Length: 229
Image (tube, one colour):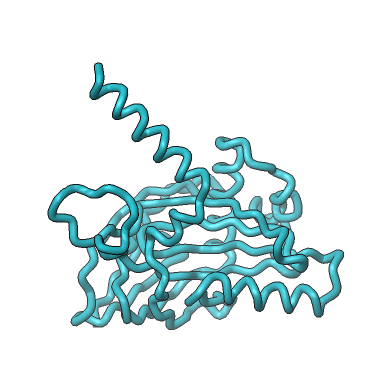
């Protein structure tokens, strides 16, 4: 086992089986609630990896929500979904009922399975340094919102139940949501979990993100125009 100690408060250790560890350590500096800068150490996860993940639940969930709020403001996403968690983000209230934190470990996409054009010699498409998405959950009547943010292979979801819906419907919707997000593991306030890599690859996630598709199309169009002079 290889143990990685992170200086970022909510990630204390990440243990990888040495035989399957093929990723590159990435270090990012993030702004978290309270104004403190911490360094976050995350790796690219491979198929069949098993991760021992330690964290501070509230600090991690607040980080995910704070990033979601900041991205929503920047991109013009609806801010109403963050109304119920604003005081929790600021640290003045406890986590609202029905708020869940999930972790999904994304794996690289083999070149043969990628629909996007890649440079010659590319064997696989690794996870992005970071990616954020606010998804429509209208297809899950028991859920109010879903925001995800990923750092390399580590994709975190903050999912809020709709308190106006019966508990039976909320439970059924959450079950269907988990089926739609394969290999997703719910994190609890225990502060440590053993998580297996999912079967979901980075390109599979991007293909469902219309904002990414639009940005990529614009980038390709701009590159073509520049080539024409």
